[in-house]
Image (cartoon, rainbow, N blue to C red; front, top):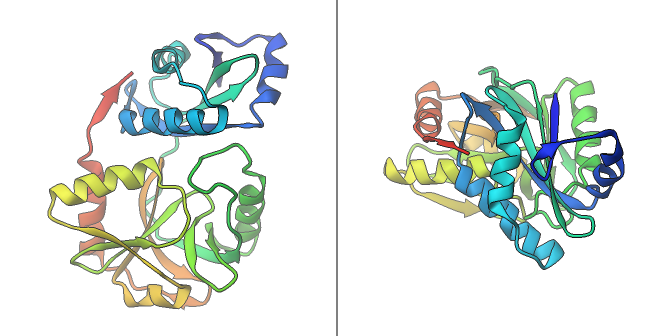
Length: 250
């Protein structure tokens, strides 16, 4: 694992700066061959959140230089932005994650993230809920409002494909980079997307329900006690669209 701060290798004295990043935001990506899918979307996410949280512009060249300085070829990379005497960039790398194609099981929980449109560093509740779901034999927590309206997964977006269009939840959520990439590729393939209020019971009506995040796209076959049949052909169309997205150099 490596860490780079403002384009240079992190040192022991940088611990205080890392603690400052508790109030900040980040983006997560999978790097392969030194490239990433959706670089422009990652940079747009970081720029917008920096303006909203700190009222400043982000040096995107510094972001690229910090990731390049990691020397990551095949890796999981996170880029954090915080304000510590000015806007600072922290890039860290770890082992790559290769998402297993096995359909996932979701456990619904009542929880809504604060400022859900920002990928901020206040992720303790999501981590806690995700771990609880895993202890109960599930793979991911599915976040809902008090009246059961689905918003997103703890670390994923949830989508539904009816064979004609992809439906995303109509609720406050983080519009993930993979979700954005997938929307673009689906549009090129002639598949429209829309947003609709969804509850857990509604998911059984769809022949393909899936999760999307930086790890990739994968089917869902159970939510709580509800069994969801997976139409493999439809899922192949969704995953194929995602796989068609190009890779960008830093």
